[in-house]
Length: 362
Image (cartoon, rainbow, N blue to C red; front, side, top):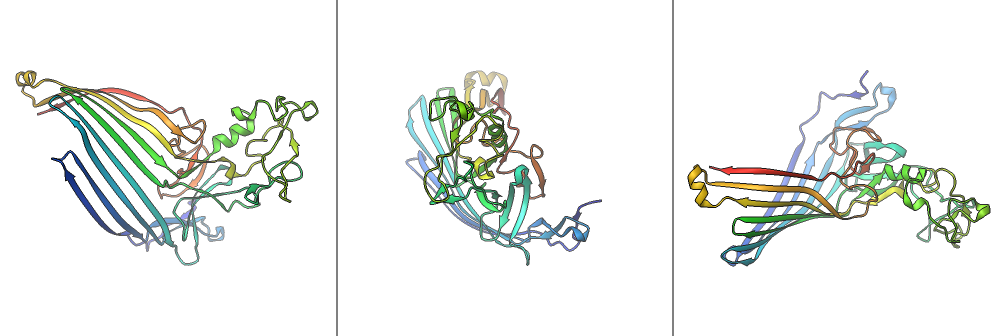
């Protein structure tokens, strides 16, 4: 039997938007920019909400409140060098978007968009940006993680703590193009700042001892995986409940010390920022003298490489853009397009692609 109750009285989703922009160019079009500011409000979004199982269903499709997006988009270009045979052009773009959930149907202040393994969930909460990650968190004393009498971290008893948000603060890209006669070299640097991601791979990898930081020597200079009797073990960074530094040494020879067994979900939330060499393209254009003989206006031969280098990232062992979109720990999710966002599981090594193409202009 289906576990979602459909709704014959659904209204169409509506969006009201306002936008203002400015475009300027100077120095015979060698310098310029365009900027846009906008506000967009979406009403009556069609989403599933939880209902008591006694109704015979788990979810009901409803028109769910209002979401507001505000932001700015900026693009700029400059040609620093331009001679008869050489041209260097720089194009840059910057986007910043801030969304907030203004309302939900009467009786709801949170809408669970998806749930993941280890009790982590993706949420839309009234008064907060859509895409809140919720789960268990550390208990803090004077801003530091609190350690119990057994040397292990204390945790919240429920999985309702806000442990992150999937939305980036801003994204940007810079493209440099160098053209010398018939040859053009172009490369794109892609950047993202902000937003968090929960890594199930790290939760398990640290628990099973596969991650590098689970091995090595401890503060005594001994292998941390030795028994406590032979000088092994570690002292968890943090403080006791009274605020004094932790001095309790714990065993690192058992399963789970660094992983999900003894740490809350918040211990595996990482900054999703990155800087990437997104694309490099080398293009050769056939001379016009040859084109007249084959009745075409232009022929370009290109070698293109994409995702060639992750210059910087804060998520260990995986590409921050490699997210779970169906399986790998995704347990439930609606048709909201956000299921799997902010959640990394079963990541494969990032793939570089290199190809060639021919472009004809008639």
